[in-house]
Image 1: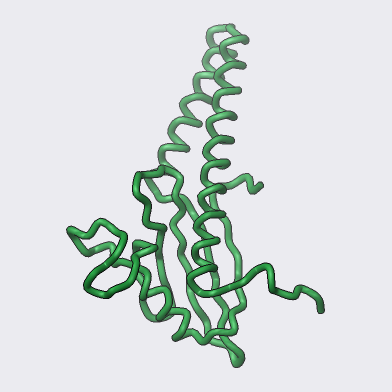
Image 2 (image 1 turned 90 degrees about the vertical axis):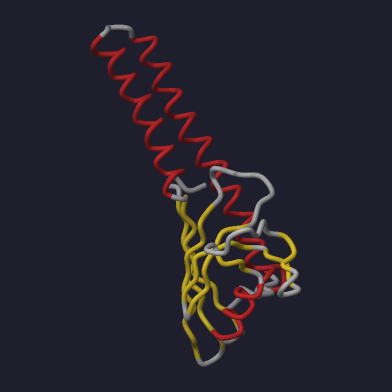
Length: 170
């Protein structure tokens, strides 16, 4: 498990840059569109699996969910052409509001731990606050990386990667 709320990876695809972008654009609903709730987009006849923007060579998307999730990752990436397909550079990160939430509560609990331990001479309460800050951060990372795994699986499914069939031998 990673100790920071982000993850990066590079995928090698046999598909061309244009095909990868086309597949992503087909299942991504632009975030600027109002009044559309996700699901089936009857105008296009396709299912919106992601919200976000897909532009020339880059994209910034997140999964469509039926109910909110604070730790849903934002997938930012770019697609670079190669002679035999393309390279897809991905970065999964928390949305800014989720990062702020995590930072705020972790710092508040750490400040309380210091205040109780040093200023008020109540070591027991200080240790409880310190433990709670660790639990808060640990749970946030757990839920974030669980959502990263789900988003990654959906992304790979959209561009038709079959991880089970990949041969990692040299």
